[in-house]
Image (cartoon, rainbow, N blue to C red; front, side, top):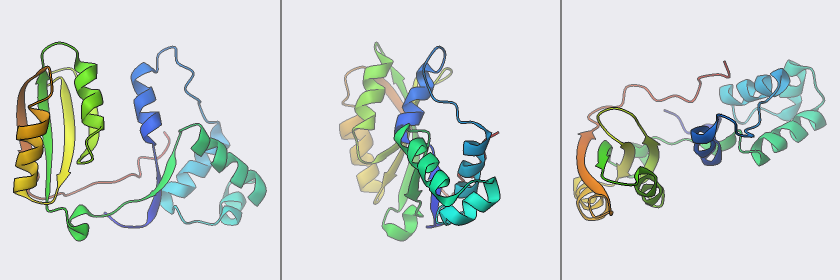
Length: 173
């Protein structure tokens, strides 16, 4: 992990993936994909340098980046190592739901400690990544907030002992 600014999918883009079939999700062309790859390598790369790499003017790159941001295709963010900014406990929480899975997933997205929410097929209906200050904080989030949500039948927590890889460099395949 690093604190450099990187390009990543925005929350809106992640949310839109659930309705991708038949949706109007924008599909960037090859030049926009090349711009995204440049930003994933270095989110602070100057537009002039990106333009040189992809064959556009600086102004054209600036316009395309703004369009990609506006469409929710990507966002440019600072990625930090949670341990270095005071968050000592991370966990993935598997959640089984009785009833409406989407309402539970939506309620989880409103919790500041929840960084990632996906509805899944398999052993769990929802997976949520939690970032907390310590074990007491994690216990409070799981016991008093997640388990208290209407429809939550059970949870299983997977506490991170050591994070070996987290990257936002998957490219644009």
